[in-house]
Length: 422
Ligand SMILES: NC(=O)c1ccc[n+]([C@@H]2O[C@H](COP(=O)([O-])OP(=O)(O)OC[C@H]3O[C@@H](n4cnc5c(N)ncnc54)[C@H](O)[C@@H]3O)[C@@H](O)[C@H]2O)c1
Image 1 (cartoon, protein in one colour):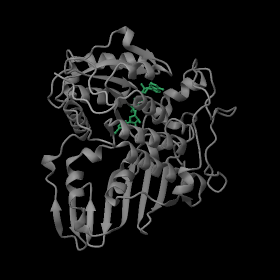
Image 2: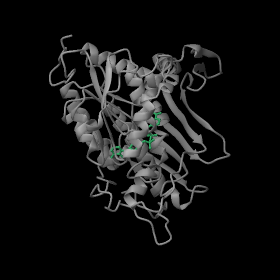
Image 3: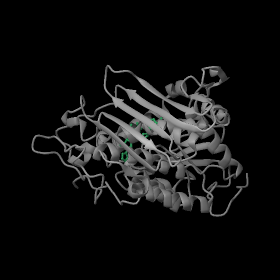
Image 4: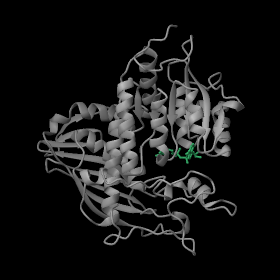
C-alpha cells in the first residue's frame, strides 16, 4: 500500500502497510501500552525496545510473547507474529531511547516521567508519531521542553496522544458534550485518595543512581511526587471541563505515615486550592495512606447543576438527574487511545495534538506541589518560568542524583514555611 504522506511526517517506513513501533520504558505500563498498540486494528509491529535495565526489558519481552497476554487484550487474541525484536534491536542504558526511536514510525514513551521531556523531544526531532504516558515532566524546565517539542510536532504534523485516558473514555466524552447543562463552572473537587503504590527497597550492591531509578516513585526528579504522578488525572479532567488552567495555587501537605528510608522525599498527602482566572476554585486532595477512605473522582459544580464523573451523570442543583451515561457502554480508554491513534496514522491523518495539554496539566500538578512544599501562594506565570530543573547534571550509573541520603540513609523532605518553591 502506498504511504499517504503529510509534510515532514514519517507515516510508514516501508512499502507495505506495517506501522513499526518502538517501546521506550518496558515496565508495567509500557507492556500494557505496547499490547494495546499491537492489538489495534492496524498492522502494527513492535520492532525495537529500550529500557534503562536489561532485566526489565527481558521481562517485558517475555510477557509480550506469552500466549497468556491474550487475557489482557479484550478478546483480541495474542500478539503472535507482531513482535519482531531480535537482540540487535534491544537497547539498554540511558541512551537506549535514541537508537530505538530511530527504528520506528511511532514511539511509545512509558518511562518514569522525569525522562519524558528528553525522550519526547528526541522522538519529535526524529519525525515520529508518539504515544506518551502522563505526566510528561516533573519540573517547569521539563514542561517548557515538552511545550517546545509540542509546537514542533504541530509543525511537522506528527500525531501525539498522551495517556490522560479520560479524554478517550466514553463516559467523560459524553459528559463533556453536555457540560453546558450545568452553566458556568464555579468550583470543582478532585480526589486521588488510596493506599499508595509499590516500594522497591534498596539492594546492597546498587549505586545511588540505580537505587533511585528502580525506586523511582519516591524521588521528584523522576516522579514529581504523587500529586503529579497520579492525581494529574483528576486535575487534568477539571482543566479540560473548565477549558482553562489555574493562575495560582496554595495548599498544604506533608508525610505522616510514609516516612521510611525507602520513601525518598515525597509527601503522602497534599491538599491544594487551585484558582482559575474567572475566580472559580478547584479543591484538590490526594492521599496515600492505607486504611483511609479511598476515592478517585471529580465533581464539577456549576451555576445550574453538577457533573459527577464517578456516577457518570449530570444533575440540576436540586439533584434531579438531567443526564445519565449508560455505564454498560463504557469502553476501555487505554485501548481506545491506541485504536484512534493508529487508525489516524494508517489513514495519513493528522488528528492528535495532546502534548500541549499534557504539559499544561503536568504544570498544574507541579504548581500544586510547589504550593504544598513551600506553603506559599504560587502563581502560574512565575512558576512555569522559574527555570526549576530537577534533573541530574549527568546520566550515569555512577553519577550522583540531585538528592542524596544523609548518613542515616534518609532524604531531605520539603518543609512548608522554610522550603522555597524554586
Ligand atoms: N495512564 C495511566 O493510567 C497509567 C497507569 C500506570 C502508569 N502510567 C505511567 O506510565 C509511566 C511508567 O509507569 P510504570 O507503572 O510502567 O512504571 P515501571 O516502573 O513499571 O516501568 C518504568 C520502566 O521504565 C524504565 N526506565 C526508567 N528510566 C528509563 C530510561 N531513562 N530509559 C529507558 N527506560 C527507562 C524502567 O527500567 C522500567 O522498566 C509513568 O509515567 C506512569 O505515570 C500511567
